[in-house]
Length: 77
Image (cartoon, rainbow, N blue to C red):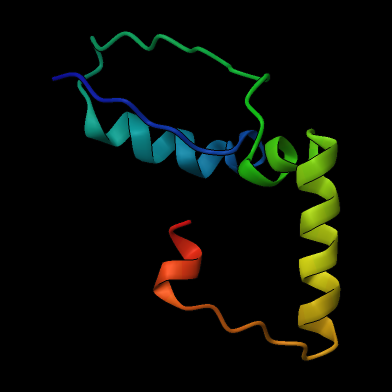
């Protein structure tokens, strides 16, 4: 049996390791790959100055209860 697990590094603890061990036989081999260069969506959006400006404006509007109504046609332009 093969399985792929994806989880944040800070959730790796002895309890998780024991749960994974319980799923496989004692002859199973673990291949561990750690990926540290993945940006989450927010980091990615904030990495572009124009996006960052728009997001900050939208957050400010939300916090000030300034809701913006758009029609479907306006959103698809």
